[in-house]
Image (cartoon, rainbow, N blue to C red; front, top):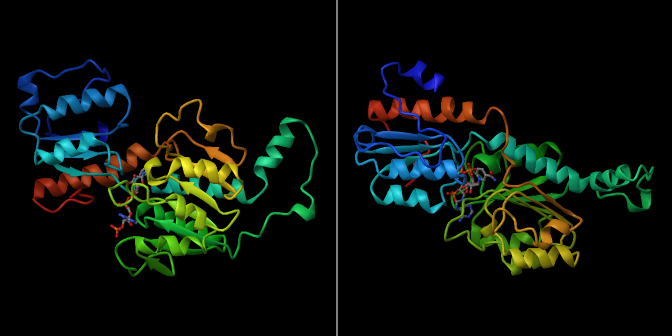
Length: 311
Ligand code: NDP
């Protein structure tokens, strides 16, 4: 609020109270011509935000803190002609760091050491069971946008060979040697040790990592998913992990969230779960407001094209 008021002192700012039952009176709703959603899509509070702004007859523009806009609530705004823009990029660094952290936990013996530590046991990993060197392993990043590019950049510092998968061709400055279209994923899977998912959930990406793609990965390969649960065939993933075909997984997102207590994923030894929380970082709100919302507000007022506009 302070950042917005400092940037635009004359702006009438209506802050929706943090109360799921809150409703704005009709005369206030009529005065809203743009809205900034600065929180999470899922809790109660967000439902009241969307209920209120959905009913604002003069709303022209909605900017959201989120990067992914697959939640149907956003479609309703687009369908009534509201311009929608996102803060994609504002959480790319913490998410990429979580991906790399998950990779290191699986690549180095952290799970084994932590288990021994809890038992107060001094159990060095013997040389005969030494993990494979990370340098020279092959990573495939599906969705080479803000998050995927940061993952690729960091992974290359560990000596991994990184290939990007996305619809548009390689661009100057892409932090990968090679970019291939999504149709090549089944073939590429055969040469992938680390499969990272950082694409949006769309009709094209739903189920993209199918049973066949999982089966094509070499034995011992690992999956790192920070995109959306529905990008993967979750039943096939559970099977591939349980049979040992996959060496492990770092999963932030799931087909059903919260992940149900009876999901087999909770109990699999080589699975690291973060509860759709890979992005958590104190600087996110500031990055979204100062880096995306305020610059877009200036562009909107100047009649210029917005950054991260959803089409
Ligand atoms: P960006 O828009 O910056 O990047 C998306 C990338 O995906 C682009 O490179 C795009 O390239 C590519 N892409 C789109 N369609 C396909 C496809 N069919 N196959 C392969 N690649 C595709 O988004 P972000 O990096 O900011 O975020 C990506 C996704 O990550 C979000 O949509 C969201 O679902 C998820 N996310 C998860 C969070 C979490 O907390 N776990 C938080 C933030 C985001 P092209 O268009 O050329 O194909």
